[in-house]
Length: 203
Image (cartoon, rainbow, N blue to C red; front, side, top):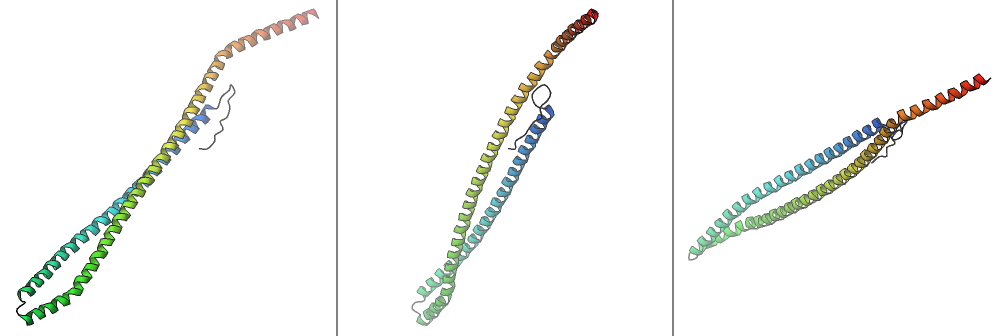
């Protein structure tokens, strides 16, 4: 809050126009601070929404991978079941066993891929949660800062308004008493003129 020096007027107090200009400038500054905080708030909300969209996209990909995993698991189970059914036929069983071994690396690669996707999902959720918590804390600090700024401005405004009102009342009292003072001065001038006239007559 900048310090302001108001020009004094003839009969005490401060210049009314200076006080009004200071109040208007203070109001404009408060409005600018509020607008800036609102813009920052909107930007943080947009960033949070973007991250939520990314999390939703990763969750959709995870659902696709889960479906594929279920399909592959069902296919593997089917192959295993067939192998058991064909156990009496050893050559055919060996062929199926070889097929299973051929598919095993793909299954293991898929399991590793699934673990990676799980880790990515956990990391994305953690990042989203951390960002949301950070955003809320930032917004809370901004709101507290704005409230403090607003309270400070209102305190200054109230004090200034009270001082201006007091000074205006003093001016009003001085103006009320001014005619009486002028009349008294006029009486004293008349008396002085009379004394001077008597002195001239005496000469």
